[in-house]
Length: 315
Image: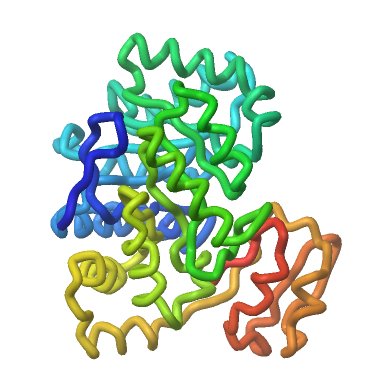
């Protein structure tokens, strides 16, 4: 496994970060012991970096996996708190449910621009004080927005960025991958630690997974790549690509034969853009939410390009 120092934080992370959303109740909903075994498998392959969030409801999986090895892992979590009380509750919840004395990276989830940062100022101040006390090692933000990456350049206290970044630009809310790339380069020059998310576009780019991961790897301004993984085969494939080894045909065959489905996340607003774009007529809007007819869906992922909220995933 390759490792890098995450910007100016001094934290050493594996080039491949274990994205834990896919094992969580929000997606594949694996039994806790099974999910913990997947994390353990990743650790055995050299992955020391785990990304989670309060929203994912999967702290129990991670606690089980890191038992007895806490200091060997780098844990990054996120919350939506904007006031001191919410920030304190989120930090206490993470410390308790992960059974740890500290969190390596604590971030505000899905920041959009300078205005949302200002709206979360009270929470930011709380996390900075928690850092002084040793409860967190470094503070950051996650974002789907170029504007937030640019806004972070004005804030030295934001030491880590977790931006969406993939070959097709899927999920970037306010621009294109060509516009996101220089913003990340500027953040890298400022010493920000950068670990990207969604290199496979929420599963919508799985048919071209190897090239999509290599695309992000080729950007030297990104220290680590978070990829959602829910099976040993996915770990083996991703590790091979990260290490520059060609995945075996048998491994690729296992992954291509895996039964997958289209998932509409709970924050869908029912705008209907996905239904209009679906050539198979597999998506309908019912009671203000998009629903998928699995018998009609061919998992092409085209609908995801039209979802402004990035609600559509292939899992």
